[in-house]
Length: 293
Image 1 (tube, rainbow, N blue to C red):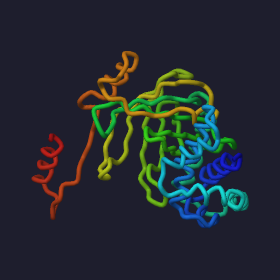
Image 2 (spheres, rainbow, N blue to C red):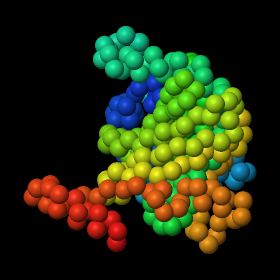
Image 3 (cartoon, helix red, strand yellow):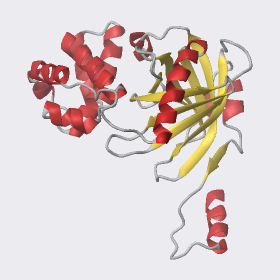
Image 4 (tube, one colour):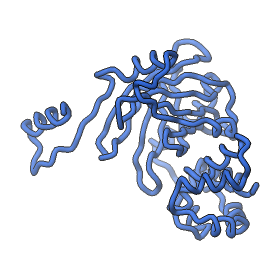
């Protein structure tokens, strides 16, 4: 089943070079939801299980059990044609589309950041407050320059065993911005991590703020801590790691300082939508009362 790994790497290459998931789905003649499930859940889980020494057949069965829209029979029957169609699809060439001045600036900053990526490259474990309970959320991240040194590539493995590929920007060794799309394409739901960079080279710990939407699409912000696990940028090694939600009463002594830093009262900022025909100061007061519940 080597085709599964090749297919994952090809989809990852196309996504990282500007090809939209819908375009990939159309070219492979598959539903966008199926391609998204393969890329974000099935294939990363399969690769991770194989790396652990699990038999390929068993690893695939487990990976497919995590989703409900991918048929094993249809997947195995279409591997060769899917791989061939993916190899036919190429990302847009430089200069094919005229970019706005803002995007030109972002592209320039992205290339400059790639030259600084070595200072922060590696595999990290992140710690933040779970939005579902009073618990510590633990999730792996990988930071590395892209193969062509055009941008900083950041990969996130969620506590629910899904991966997101994003980009990072490093500005004057003081701040970093990391951006992902949290939802399946074509829906856009950005989550952003703002990191304060220490004033020395090769830091083992980074801290900042994690901004995203909650389950009701209300904006929330919380503290986040990155602790370096390895200088490696190997994707296969990264995929062996798993995220998790650790309840407060199960947090070990070595992790308690991370919980104390990220999960104390006041380290979680949230707004909510108040049903109202108009927005006025009384609605603002109602919102604050609702958030106190």
